[in-house]
Amino acid sequence: MKYNYKHKKILIWGIGITGISCINFFVKKGIYPKVIDTETNLKRLKFINKIPKRIAIKLGNDIKSWIFQSDLIVISPGISLFHPLLQQASTLGIEIIGDIELFCRETNKPIVAITGSNGKTTVTSILQTIAKKSSIRVATGGNIGIPALSILEKPSDIYILELSSFQLETINSLKAYIAVIINITPDHMDRYFSNFNLYKHTKLKIYNNANICILNTKNNFFKKNIHKQQKKITFGINYGDYHLVKRHSTTWVYHKYKKVINLNNILLRGSHNFENVLVTLAISDTIGFSRNITLKTLYKFNGLSHRFQTIYKKNNITCINDSKSTNIGSTIAAIKNVRTKGTLRLLLGGNIKSANFYALKKYLKNKKIKIYCYGVDGKHIFNIFPYISSCTLTLNQAMHLIKSEITSNDVILLSPGCSSTDQFTNFEERGESFKKLSKKILKHI
Image (cartoon, rainbow, N blue to C red):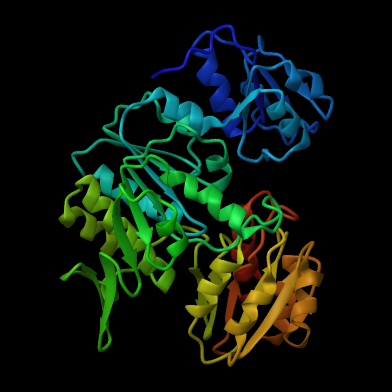
């Protein structure tokens, strides 16, 4: 059922790529919403020129009156539902949603909904590659960087949406054909008041009204909290409908009792990526993609930038760019997958988002390791590991310090476990900076 937004006072909060997609969505319907953003620096509002002149805009913190005059507020993912003004608006009966809710109200086509603390972009990207070679028309959007509303009019038989916890907060109408939570580790604890349970319940919303729930056997919380009537497909490193079997030096993916793929022959590395392969197979088989196309794609897929990516290998020194590591879980996965005869030189830092870095301790035992802390919360991390750490203000300074200490067979790993926004625009910019620094600083070693 498509909603009628005529005669509603609509307010859009956020002038980023998502906010612009929401504005365009309403303008196509002949509706001109008001738009607000607390940012006042026009240089940071790079999409503001894309807003039609007819639309009223208010920048800064004087937004209370516009909020309370609204019937419907559409917020960008970066705006928390716990914002005091939104809490007040909610008590007044003002509806608050996000772009994914708008999307779900507009389509009856099947949706594959993918979330997880780590791996969701990798899985979505592999499925997108498989889809391009398939006879099934697929449109992909969401947290992957393509606003969901921008794919509504694309010719497609099925939608694949990558969804963050922020996007799931404001969803009520999602009825996914397939829903999956790849994994769950503490993340965005600054948003969820250091309450991991609240974060898990937000992720759980993806399974509401889903036809098929794909479940990680490692996380019993989700299995216990979905309806018994919902169809379930399971995956897991040790057991599940899709699981791994190690025989001698070879690791196989099995679907129930049948061998599917030899993981020794794929380009992706690390146990976290093996989990991604299991999920991809489960989704691909359920959608009905050709198994042959799926396997060929998995064999050739080389991973995405900034995700445990080897960017430098020279003179027995290796640099690994894992800038996408914005939470402890992804840093742990990276540490577990590093193999070196020398010292692991680990770069940690940025905005910790209330994360618990003490959780790293047990993964550092019996390892030859030196930690280089930097950024706004670098000192906090240093204080947790004072005997094996150094602390600098910037990534640049940390890399110069590493240069003075590095020896043959060492591995430099950027897996910060933190948000990048203290010193960089995003994790991509942080990763590109690390690439340039690695080549520049290490070339004379």
